Image (cartoon, rainbow, N blue to C red; front, side, top):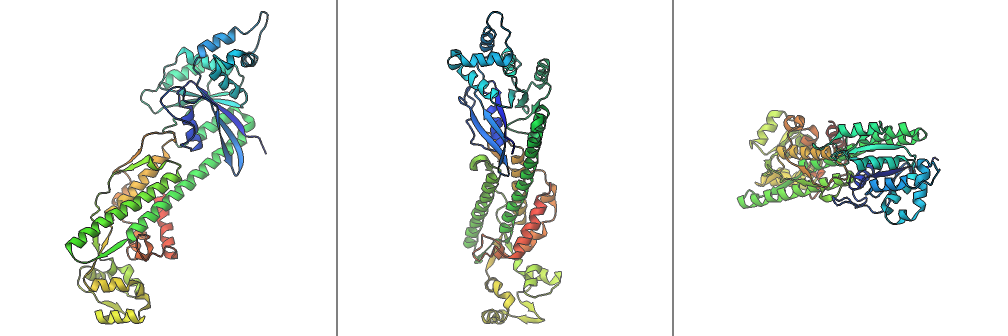
Length: 458
């Protein structure tokens, strides 16, 4: 088993070193991120493992605060007639009193870099290329360890990337990585590890394993997210509420539906945030519109009739939905209200038992409130938008993800509602929101699987 590769994350104060580690480790709680300078005062470590084997150790270090004065001090350390190389000069500095007093913070950085295999030099690309940064690089280079510059905050309109590239080239640093810790590119970690592999040939296989594992985890997150959204949609499509045909009762039912669907969506959002390792308060959703619901007659749609053993054409089903009739055809016979009630009570209609109360309720003038098709579309769009936002979000981001009315995703906005949701209309037992839920039914699992595959598509 190889020893884990050790990387020191170094750079000027307040350039986003801790933010970078939060994103690389997918840990929003690592260290302290603040706009105040010198937030990190001690070296903190994190470990990346694959299949229980530690492959990479990352060390967050304090910011370099006074590189100009330290470089002057290092240059005066040589005694007459001496020609110390960089590592020897740094070693002498670390043994002296100034490393414990005036340059205590800088000494912590240099000790960690000397104990590491390489350093990641984090650059705030918005900053001008000042003399203090050149001195920092000179000091760090004198440790004799490979350095990989990391451009942070490159998505800002104020970034000065061209000037930094020129300055780094003058110092002989040509390998570099663009990695915005707030909005990292999807292949950002892959590029970072591949660039490190060019500098650290002996660690190439370890870094390649990290790249492969990162891709596997990404695919697994997408699949799990799609399933969470599919379960939400099935729950909402199959949800129904029976109510008397009374205006006041109907208004109360509509308000109850709104609360129920909002709560269920929030459960899904919370689960998605946990899946992507974000905090519960990291997403803010606007109010769901179009939640007046609809008075559904799904009791008489072809899927329900099929379960009752009724083979009818679209014309008959449409006639029932329009209120043309309430009798159910079974085996060529017409059963009225009394016959139907007796058949259900006596168990003669085994396939209808699960629908007995609904059938009788319909015949007695009760109505069923279901979620409008447009709400199902909107729920799908909002969750997909949230997943896309989290894919492009670094774990150092401090602002909330805003999930509002999406404008893209034409298939879900305008296309036909998936068959899985159409079928769910006729299966109230598939919804965890209904009292007689049967969530382990194989047919429900099949529809969730089919819907999840559809949701996982770009």
